[in-house]
Image 1 (cartoon, rainbow, N blue to C red):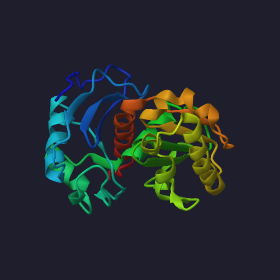
Image 2 (cartoon, rainbow, N blue to C red):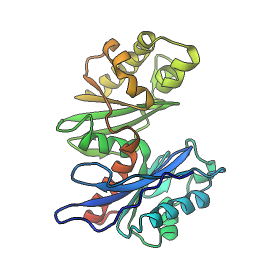
Image 3 (cartoon, rainbow, N blue to C red):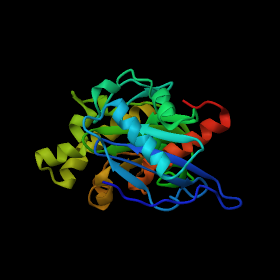
Image 4 (cartoon, rainbow, N blue to C red):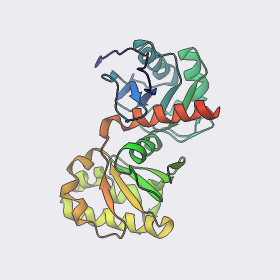
Length: 267
């Protein structure tokens, strides 16, 4: 199904625009981004993720979204996967045939040009939140954690991303962090927000011991109810809720593509 909203790709004087696409397990959504404000220019456009979500099927949808906006500039695409040098090294909530797929080459072929940057979805959200959301104007080490079926992570230092961290798989008191404190654990065990916050605190304290961050940003759907659980956290580092929500992946992808185009390091 689609949520339409086409907008001219010709920017106003002084305005910088980029384009991002966020590939998820249930939907693929894209849009034009104002790179100065972090806001979408017009509506996003969303298409259901094809099933099975094979590389060729997803690439066809990505190309359709780019064509919908008649966009010809750099394109950033997120994947729920570890991505190194444009190659998917894992696959979460998408078909396992993505593993070892050259995603950059695939999307570039589907779109018709080489100005494509591919990155992990949590990394994209982290970049966006650090620039425009919960981490705006915050220096030092910022860690975004997305609480959902698992725990995604992104680490930035003074705005520079350390890509492909997988802190959800770090062991905390004998369990992987995401098996202890993902929001899915709260639902499965029917935990109160206060009891679930105890588990989240254990995980954050472990991350603190390793990284000594200056700020945690809590993302994922449960961040919309942050007032019910963030006040119960007992870890040392301040924790704030993510603010960009469903647009973070699109915004972060657009930022990554713009940066890659400027440095000549699209990947």
